[in-house]
Image (cartoon, rainbow, N blue to C red; front, side, top):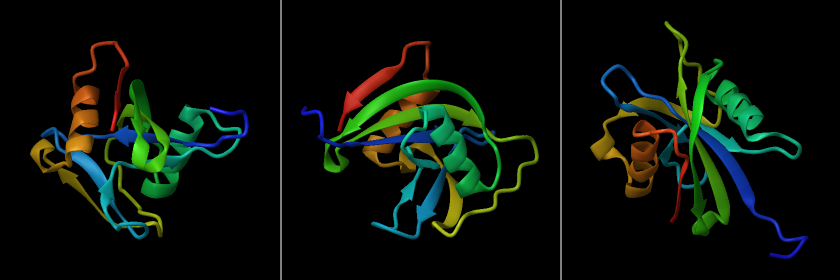
Length: 134
């Protein structure tokens, strides 16, 4: 990689409900798909700062970050994605930004193969940060 080459970095939260279903947001942009809360790092931000900012913007609340569980390369987006296990405050009421039209909890079998892989790694976290290429 040359000095002036660019690629994307993003940070995303795996948040589950009491039954173990995973919170996803429906985007109002791109492919209008469902995805984990989070997004791209701004210049000068750390991965933790970006995660907290993105979750605050997208969910209207501050999440509690437990741990970084994985770093994944996505060739389609030329992107490294940092996955964190997070929790919502007790009694949290989600307030979506204009970037998203809906939220819901998905059972693991409902997730795409890539999402399921990242979420499985996250939920099975044993102290070792995982990585994979998609």
